[in-house]
Amino acid sequence: MHRIPRRIDSSLIVAALLIAAVVTGAVSILRLDTTGRSGSGLSEEFAYNLQKLAAVDPDLILYAESGLRVSTGFRQSRAIALDSSGRMYVAGDRAIGVFGAAGNPEKLVELSGEPRSLTVSDDGKIYVGVGDHVEVLSAEGQQVASWNPLGDEAVLTSIAKHKDDVFVADAGHRIVLHYDAAGTLVGHIGAKNPDKNVPGFVIPSPHFDLAVSRDGLLRVVNPGRNRIETYTRDGDLEFAWGERSVDIKGFCGCCNPVSLAIGPDGGFVTAEKGLDRVKVYNSDGGFVGVVAGPAQLGKEGQLKVCNTPEECQGGGLDVAVGMDGRVYVLDVTDNVIRVFAKKEAGR
Image 1: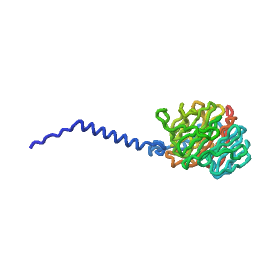
Image 2: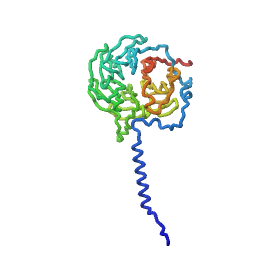
Image 3: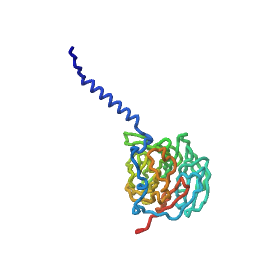
């Protein structure tokens, strides 16, 4: 008996390859991380040398602690802001603590709920994110307005005011809200829009900061992408800078930086969590130097590089910059404000 050799139809092979490609693509889409929960993408075998990462070249440290260290008095501090006279405003527990430029406590303003963010306008008004809404207080601490609530999922992590515009970062909805000064919602900024080349915000943990530069452009931290994005007031993405890297010039971990401030020269001050460090960049996003590393912040015993959001949900640093260029660092774990001044040339 002769066996008849079986021929494989080439069309069947092509069909099989096409099916395999479709299945692979579908799996890739299902695995696409839109929240940052998959971490940094580094393999489990990748071992960080934390001591090496934490050690900052002394020549890169451009600031020194001024000696002014202020205890907030809160069980849980969350955000810091400065007014034009150098007063410090700290949101924590269910109140705002106000401290003089020398660190002396001036007043405690009680709130209806727990605050997560605040800013102080040029006329002294305080805008504070309380629960699911924004409240506006007079310079004396009296409530003058309460804006419409944004729902149970809202987590208002940052507020910035520029002229008649107020921008609010909502980490819960992963969006920036644009209001006018009266509290009327004007629009949303940062929603994913491929047609406008807007990638969308990746917010793995409740750290989502923003600031407005003197040119009116909005700078927003996209922590899951380890970069700072620049938007117009109408929501157009202009450009972005920053990269994921363990190098001192980059932002390491799953979701950094956690906070951002703009200095009087237009440069940026950023803070990272996990491997706590505060750094300075110029107005174009170029690395300038370091304000403080883990050693200067007293964090050498708490070193951690967070590859997943669950590892670094708590802690963190908030930053503000005074008109004199001094950098104010709010340690939300130790509930203390540290103040750093630029070193004199040659020191």
